[in-house]
Length: 106
Image (cartoon, rainbow, N blue to C red):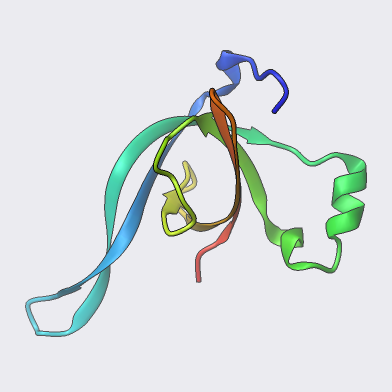
């Protein structure tokens, strides 16, 4: 990944998983369990990337950069500053940063 200025990591997100638990009525509910709380930067797509993604599943994705997390994989969910949960579609890692392509969690 190209060099990213540390000042761009200016929003907080949590990275975690969903677990199934029972509520007080015995119903099974999905509960979000936070594992990491990190700073992130929103990255924008270039004009060509926007055109290439038109009409594909990547059209409704967001891309963020975070500091590298060694055991991060696509089973985690990301809760951004807008309090919406996202699934990790793709991870591009290097020694310093992880670039995550996210889509809204259904």
